[in-house]
Image (tube, rainbow, N blue to C red; front, side, top):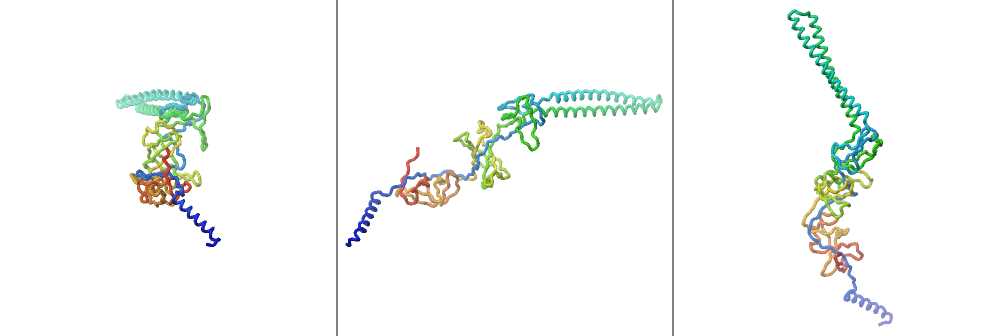
Length: 384
């Protein structure tokens, strides 16, 4: 053998020895992967709000007197439970109360005057009848009869005018009472006082047109709560009233509350140019669920568009961008790429129509370095 060929031969022998050692002595280091077993179960197609929703009361009134004035009585405090019709706040109204008293007195006077005028009218009517009978017996002149009849008609008109005066006095009293009522703020429904803006002896004024001012009393009916959540405009067309939903709240971690879609807003909110949403309202299926909740809590709503029960499913996180999954082959201890045909899907599970079978193990750590089709692999022990 020529001397110049000997180095090449030695390199070939060394490469062969290295290959033999790699194959027979386990030179390929397996990749440790995390797997999940393909099982059967429920798969749902769902949509979730794009931003946090809010727990709201079915009724909420921001109340203020319809007239300005000084607070004379403050009969409620924040956090109080109040009943419908209960007085919450009253402005100084002694002058208006006096006007009501005056109107009541005028009404009494008008009724007394009407009684007197009508009694006189009745007497004049009887006198006219007597004069008529006397005239028939030729015991009085026709002139006296005419005078008696005219007087009776005049007295009757005075009676009717007095009765009309009663109606005028009643209307005047109603106006005085309505004006007085404007200084008294009452609860329009049963609820809880959320906020009071004002103190005793302070002045309050109604909001000018087009200018929002804090309400004197913020009243919330917390006997009925719902969640309003913004849904992406792309998802909104698939949502319908009475669809099943689930509500989760940061204030109640680990709990899910069944719900129903109650209302879908008929317009799109352009809060941001690139984030247009439609407000969807969901009500709690069980009123007992919101017994300890407060309006204003942040909440998320997941709406179930469709579902399949007892179908093969894989974790959605196991599916790669090309629609394939990596299946761990326990016999060869290697990973195999499989193409999937899928059905319904959500962030947790995807329905499998073909490609894998229940019981096989798919890799969920697909972003791990070295994880690819055909590599040797071992299964990481389950996390405690």
